[in-house]
Image (cartoon, rainbow, N blue to C red):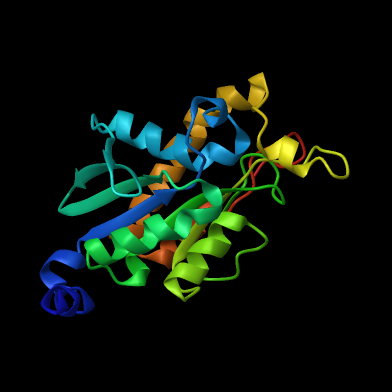
Length: 212
């Protein structure tokens, strides 16, 4: 047991430098599948489908592995429910012998307009319970997080109902395009670095008054 812990404490550079853990946050169960809170799951489902890989049940969650130009992306959908997501992230970070800068977490954000993306290399949980638990379990804020705006069209005291509600039809139609942007940005993060990925992703969606 001690030998195993010692091995995990010193990641093998030849393996870990080309290995990345991408975590999509959400809640398990059919009743949550299409909800705003599960947009992290949706992004990884789209990536896996486009890469012709499937998720398999594993410790603390469902996992799929995408091999891409010498990189190995471990896509993880925690089965611990949102508020205990840190258990899954910590387990797989240790199991894969990864430094924290090889972890990226995708989650929803009600403080951003729908479709807006915000990538950061570190930071606070911003009131998101999933990020908060991950921060507590990893004992650090120094890991990347990609927030996806889901809007905030709800009245006082209706936040939980809103995040556990489904996207409207117009928003559902935009999810595939959004997933393509997210996957492209995460690949840039792994291949080029967090700075270039932030430049690529951190823009507002186009609107009638914003033609960037």
